[in-house]
Amino acid sequence: MENTWKVYLLAIVSFLVGTSEYIISGILDKIAHSFGITLAAAGQLITIFSLVYAIGTPILMTLTASMDRRKLMVYALGLFVLGNILSFALPGYGWFVFARMIMALGAGMVVVSALNIAAKIAPSGKQASRFPWEE
Image (tube, rainbow, N blue to C red; front, side):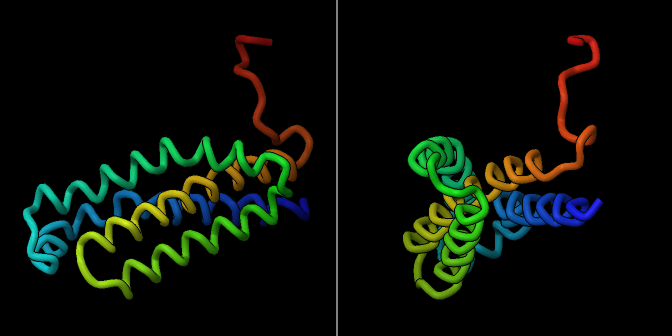
């Protein structure tokens, strides 16, 4: 029971980091106006995030396979926060794309690490299991 709150915390962190991919979809028009770009170019920010997330996460998780998952989670959160700070501080669309790429790498590693940690600390009998029809 003592690890239950940790599992919930990991779920909340995963949700919050995961929403970073699509959260800008509601303000694409404001982003386009702010950077002086088309709405389609602003929409590419979501595509770029998704591609970097999908391609970069497996590569980084393979490269960091020998690291302690909890330590990796902290580093990944740091990378995610760095991407957010860069997106705020750096001027221009090109830098914003770069910051979104950093955020995507951090977000992917956070989610995978959180799932891994949650599976390890979940109480016995509450961990993910096979489908009932496979038993």
